[in-house]
Length: 316
Ligand code: GRF
Image (cartoon, rainbow, N blue to C red; front, side, top):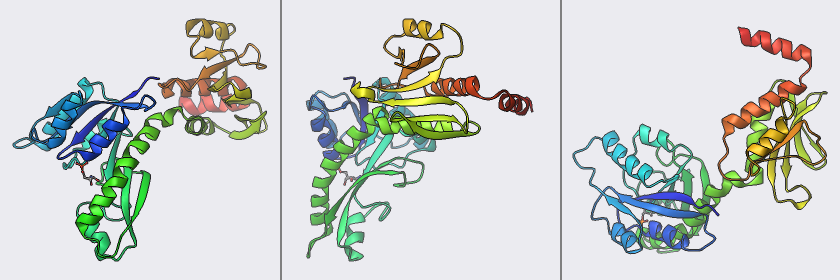
């Protein structure tokens, strides 16, 4: 299994980073930590990571502009080969450039049940509000602070007599479990059949007059009252494969694609010579290319009249 490479950013003790790192020691963990970086060279978490044999980087942000410092961290992450970033107690607001550069690739853990209590002092605010439960959330990082889509949460009961510290200590136990579990699910989500189907669905249904149906247990997309142009094969007859089936655009294209890359392309059973199976479950998918394929397949089956209208529309 190819493991996703994760860079972790910390500012202090780094207990969440440690939890991610220890979870990553399991053979079946789908991610590995390739760098732990901090905006404080003395952050205790850096020494811990180094002792575990992980590459570290520590530099103070003092005296630097936000975007300038973020560019230094960004360069370290890229040099380490990180595919994802996990913020773990990183006490810095991030520049828009940095956030944009890791769009949908950066997670954060926050000690509250978002959307409640963004920002600081979350534990005291939950106690003061008389909440029965506090907790923690892992979310995708977007430009707005503590605001991106929530991927996972653990509620933690507030006990009578809880102080901010006693509550924080209990929530931290939940954080350590939630973060590695959520990160593992996140880095593998693009291989999950449901996620892949949704992605194909988005592209297919954006084609003119497209509709979705189910045939032979496979979700498929066709032109309303017309022919089908895309199928998604999910574990068909237990083959364990998730693939996109589309029409080829030239004779012999099926054979040449399979010859070019037999790990990705295959001849879909019962579909004949004019269709090609494209594996979606191999990790890296080029979605621009797949969208081009789906559009080309749509054109193969679209009635002449509709194609003519499309061509006229495209000229304008
Ligand atoms: C955690 O409570 C986390 O939720 C918040 O900052 C704290 C970091 O603690 N974002 P640690 O450095 O991971 O121990």
